[in-house]
Image (cartoon, rainbow, N blue to C red):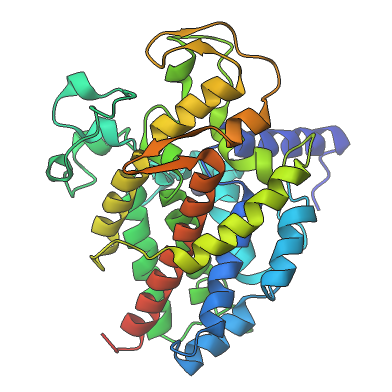
Length: 372
Ligand SMILES: [Zn+2]
């Protein structure tokens, strides 16, 4: 090891950690690990999964086992910003977030020409043809039409919108290619060692999961518009949707976790992926579009959780210092046709993400093995 002295090393660690924490546009690492491992475990348990794929998943799902263990992990495990004691698919699914904070986080990812942090989301509003609609509105009137969205990442509108659909297409292709050439996992004498299906399955899972977090579909990715224009005391609601329940620094919210788990398990049984297309790019756009509809629920729940009055367009009062998690997660409003609490929405979107991962992995396996 090169001798930098302790102080430099600590600085490096702190700066790296800040890089990860800075652009917190992702389900927390703990959620990615959970969703990815559950997708693997469900496919392993499904008799319709090809036997060879089950075998590959079994060996790649190191540190995961079954739903009983996942429940304990969800209820009690602390993860934070480093995926301790996690290996295989669960580990690889955290890497896209780790990449953001690592030294490479400032380099561009090719062919996209943007940094890693720009690959996890798409601000749908920015893709609308009319620049006057490039902001978030609670009435969802600034959501673009699918036909407005150009399928060319060189198009000027993609420059700041975030390139999630292209990255999902890219990782899917890399996973298929790894299967084609039989690179299933890291092994001795295989270089580059970490160019394999296990890695790309983890990356792909990460982005597919991000796809189902409504905040990843909007310029208003912390629901700041609900706290009044330019309010410097506006909290990080993005974090509240993700880490507050799962992996909070200061409180476990155990009663809410106990309430969440059966909702999530029930959604895993109930949710059918409504996306018809198998085209990874087009499917990503559709998932963004649907997830976007939950944004008013999140914003209004945040107003309730921080004890604001008034309306979304004209909020009154100041946010309290610490989120009232009960008021936030139990806030209820219609999303589309269905009334749901924020907790139910979260369970639904996370279960849907698991289903998307199962489906797209399975499709990649089939395409990589010439079955499609
Ligand atoms: Zn992410």
